[in-house]
Figure 1 (cartoon, rainbow, N blue to C red):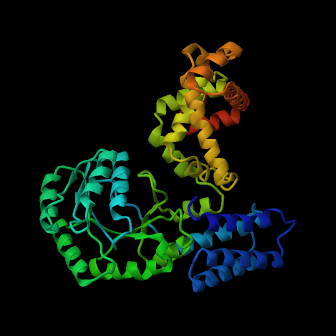
Figure 2: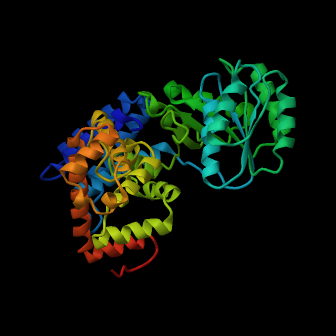
Length: 444
């Protein structure tokens, strides 16, 4: 998960409230000290950490809980609100025709981010092209070409042409019919006059709708001064923070950029080209505190699920007609939504429930289950009750697995079917699930 250490520390702190018989001033002061410590350990600016913890303490001690809200819920709500405020405002990129220019220092992840951004727009149904304007770094064009192949979008550039301005002009002509054009520019080890001059000249040619600064979150609190310097040089419209998942300084980068009022439009949360997320402070903090993010989970599901087949699966699940075929489809959909660890952190109460080793083990088990089901006949998938000893031995031999693994799969299936059957008898739950598909009531 993004900012694992900070998230774990904050969730452990809030558990003290959940286990307390009542909310006392002493408990609140202890809570505030723990939050302060967690923020500082995540490299959040000392002054900001002190101001934030003091505000939480004052509000928790002085404000009365609204009607219908317990003291515990009120304190958690205050913590959530103040952490959201500390991140500052964010903004989203429009989903329409536009030209985007990526800038940043050397080694910050611009080229990989160009690919991630390209995949983001492609998933939204837009046609796009990538322009390789980094003509100074060896193999920069080759790297972007490989990425473009992975996401199946065109790239324009040359390993031989060292004139960035010419490459950009020709690339814009090549991609003039496309919805989105992303220009990957060169970087330096420092923001020098040569880099500023090249960025300004490219900007005049591109006339970008967005100039996005790509920064590695490991720079911590130095993210603020960097964002400010680039903004003064070329007028940055937004920031993309990379490597936020593995950075102990991630809290410093987030808070430092927020303080400069440079909006964070995306955060990189992993190495894969799918690991780019819009930064909604409310959703981000909810996940950090273990409160989940069901809205993002639903949006992610909509990207990989066909609405009609999803509704059909839901009907079968709730009516008890749940087969191994349905279970396999669920697993495949879950895999498409991304790593299990990232999916789980969006489910309220599940973040932090399983350690990384357990999460990896569960992911491996799901992959193994799919291999086992691929070795079954259609009859066995539709009617798992017929899978007895002889069939188990045949499936094990065909999939190169142990018979015990097949028994574990069948046990998992029976548990899932039983749970779905129980849901099927819950009328309120039926209506709730079907409402997600916009179909109103469910008639079985």
